Length: 268
Image 1 (tube, rainbow, N blue to C red):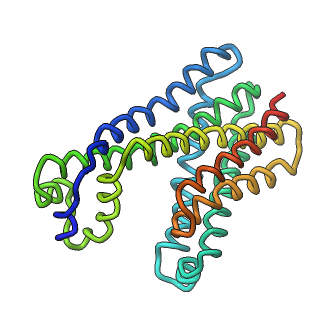
Image 2 (cartoon, rainbow, N blue to C red; image 1 turned 180 degrees about the vertical axis):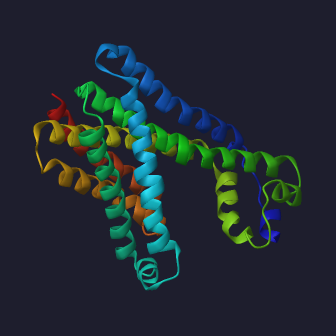
């Protein structure tokens, strides 16, 4: 517990976290409003909702179920994956690609059979990427902000009690609290840039899968899965501590450009 008592909240941690929270909300909301305003006659809000639901079902229900069996549970498979960086990266990237792109394929081909416009495909991608921000990234940022506020205004013991941090959970909670304490405007910029790039990747991959569905191109789905895996490779390496954070952003920017070029050609 003494590690928590030594935590000092940086001067810019709270304001930068607060701005980050606001921007995480603004990114998907602004993307939806601007795209709908420009293409209202060729888009339907149902496609936005379908993109959001598609992500939640494929990535947060089905994929997480497999993760529990293959990564979190204690069995020979999980021990092998967690014990090898190569296996961890390959497994993580493959699961993300298969489940998310497979979910896109199923939804676009079998559920969204009406109003198949390219503008709706983009709106689907906004829904997919937007709900990832709101349901996955935003809660983490809000918790970091709350942690920074609590540790800056009271004792470590009071903050830990408010956050329900016990002796059993202290080891897992410490890195998150330390990250919140060290958060600054540079980290804010990296996080916002990462989300913007991820949003563009989701839109691009949706366009690729959509074009494959409407034109009957069977190679579109494997291409989307491969591009998704390549995009997720460095984030997975970062989770293992194998690469620095800045390299993840550079890698993500490069593959966002690749996905964007391919998607733009298919969109046109």
